[in-house]
Image (tube, rainbow, N blue to C red; front, side):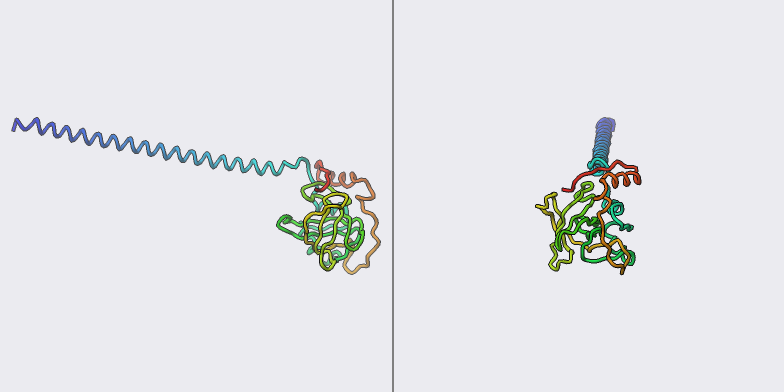
Length: 231
């Protein structure tokens, strides 16, 4: 029995040593796995933060990229005509029911109401300054193609029935180039429903300096306005 003791002792020591090695390796592996997971999570969090940050920068860039303050078409139409309605431009036609006369024939002083489209989801309104013929009018407007106030812009009717349900707006003051076709509701006249048409005189913007309208708007908003031609 005494001769067998050293062998037994060596065997026990070998088993203990092997178990210790296994436990040590397991601990190192767990630590490495935890570290890798933590590192990956940190990278993901940082990436998400960076993406959100860049998103904010893009939104801010779009908001401030125009430089200056551009009068919205609705605010301009209210200031430069005798038609004043609430809501976005796309709402004016329906909001005018029972308040102003509406129709499909242009008149000086009326407001041409554009429908909402994918490119122009809020619609658009412009003030008619002159009727050239049954297919051509001249308008004043603001915030068309992200520009400021534009005067004496030619608009042509391209509807099949000459009812001004589809128009094209000039891209230059010579009226030689016109943009895409836009659908419209028609014209809102500055008189109550059923009232007889009156001879319209030139508007504030055409009789008075453009600065008069701009100054009136600046007084309302306290903002510095941008004056530019539509493109």
